[in-house]
Image (cartoon, rainbow over all chains, first blue to last red; front, side, top):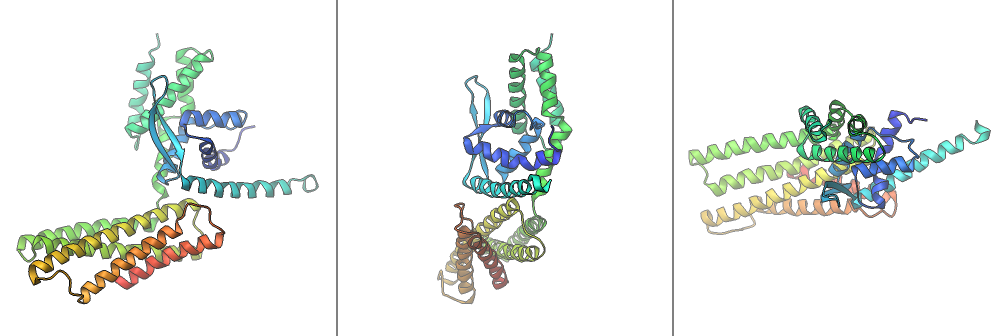
Length: 111
Length: 242
């Protein structure tokens, strides 16, 4: 099963915020984490993640910093800011509302 | 023999041609590309295969550029208009101040005072104009949380600029008054007005911070009330100063 493009786009912000709520991370690791958590079913075009991250940074929801990895490579790490936590809470409420509504509608008696 | 460095350099060249691609963004994308290539090589691919596969996963320059372009469209139109008007006002006042200096009609202190006070009051008026647009827009449709956050940030920034410019204008005016009239402050009408405007601007900034507490609100109505308070304060300030 492949997710629709629109759904992938809409879920990118809550996914990224949720992953960053676990701890600081960088682009490649975020994509790997999404793949791992979705069992490989959510596949982003990798380049699409960076505009999202930059937008979140522009909105003061996350902050970034360059650090060097053990291999000596520069990595741009992102961390969640207090406004980002608040945005995540709002996103959770909205997505929970949508999923609970759909779950109720799709119970066997409604099918 | 495949040369990864050469391929990456060629890819960077292609990406540079895409509008809006900064060096920092390219560094970040290149880092991603290299990590993916390394991972795929570890999983058994050859270097050329891994590079091609990683490129496909990353997406083309045009697609990435178009995603970045979408970031520029997130600014609310009234904010763009207000910022554009502010810049035009700044340029016009700069030209006016230079002309007055050249003609000898004003000294540096007075020209600086006129420049700063016009921009300070003008910026306060613009925050108020945004407040009016905000209320008008809310009558038609609600704002997304992200747009609300962006608007909150812009109005706070403009509020700080307005308060800062007005404060600078008042200080320049005081120094000029001391040189010309032998006193800093005499509570005349204009001075009382300037004092009241600064007090009003500081109250606006305080109300704004109150409405932008990142801690979870006790309830939704209190949050809405705080936001409303901040916006209405800005609107009232603009009406008052105009």
